[in-house]
Image (cartoon, rainbow, N blue to C red):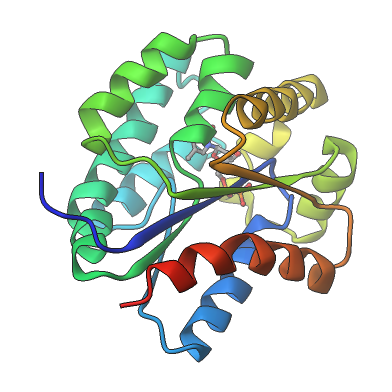
Length: 216
Ligand code: TYD
């Protein structure tokens, strides 16, 4: 396996948790410090990934079944890992990803009930052993975060997920908390109810030790 000199940081949380804003703020801060930062998003991140994303988030695709849905998330991820993430890490860049395998574990593995094993098996095939060095989990109750997500006025074509039952989102949150408790070294859980600056400060406190160590 090629040497990975960079740092891989993922952002996780429910829909509307504020993780995308926080990732952007972290990227800006790291760039101000002179670091090479690559930002990516799942599903998406690459040209192929963007095409897969359209299938996944199209509200016309209500008939998409749970198993093909899981496979599509991993198809997008496998392309992202090979095309973008691994080459950037090999160059020594800091890669920030808005969601990664933990999303599939929380949403498909737990909340949709496909099970841990299926997700772990696909991760082995798709990710070449890549595990985030740090995962920032923005934890917030679904009532608050879904209200925020609605305020963003997402385009009509990207609403499939936001129409999920409230119960589904509660299960996603619970899954993330269980996963974080199981891997306390990798996960940093941050209370997403605080204001943007406070959350950004907490994200920076979590990230700083990791990026200063790896400074090239
Ligand atoms: P997006 O509009 O990017 O929402 P968010 O800003 O909340 O990330 O939509 C991504 C949706 O896809 C979101 O509802 C979570 C879901 N998802 C999965 O169910 N499994 C996955 O593996 C990934 C990456 C995302």
